[in-house]
Length: 295
Image 1 (cartoon, rainbow, N blue to C red):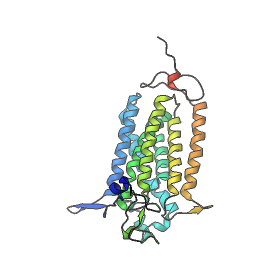
Image 2 (image 1 turned 90 degrees about the vertical axis):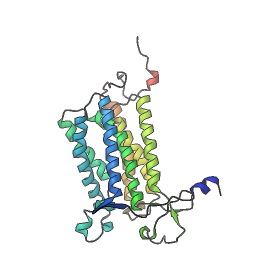
Image 3 (image 1 turned 120 degrees about the vertical axis):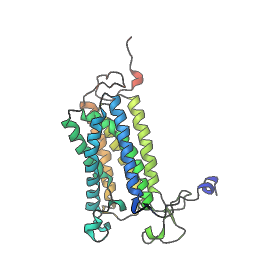
Image 4 (image 1 turned 90 degrees about the horizontal axis):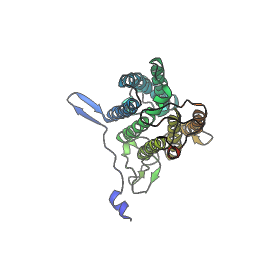
């Protein structure tokens, strides 16, 4: 056995996802989501202010966008995984602390509502979308820890040294062998999202990307990673032509993101930013290393 296998062996899962303070029961899934939201707001705010914006708009967009995102995420889950909602359905529909938030619906609803708030305030919506892209990825990375707390959405059985331990009460049939460990898909997506953040920030510094090109790249990169991660998951899902529904959504996101990026670079407005040199003319992103500055 390799030294890595000896050191890691497997990844344990928490045996409970709650703790109590007096009469209160705190759900760690919910705390994880709050931490993810706070991280996104902080990163977006710092980036927006560095480009001449103000914090008040970020707070306004977050207030309405987060609320819409939670509703959209829950509605997506209910629409695609109604059979997983615990009985009685009227109660299970509201119990989001047990999981069941579809990121696709959450991001879509949150971005649409946040954009409407920003537009009404007269802000540069495409630029704001570029500011929020890295923050969303960080939030999605942190949010995946909620799946770990709930022991949900894990992958196929694996004997890799980083296999995830799952309690019997959280296992899906027919995987009841006590020695079985599973692909930690929450960890794969967490790592993928953080790497995507680093890539987006590098591209932003290296190239002159017209807004909302960075957001379009976020959609493309995230969906590409989500496609192969979905292939590993074993939780129940609707299938179409042999693929999980989320795989089709991810594939559409990759194609749509690439088309959106291409369109934004050909037809988008080039705007100067306080943290960058003045924009150059041209239809596509231009490497900054090739810019010759005058004295």
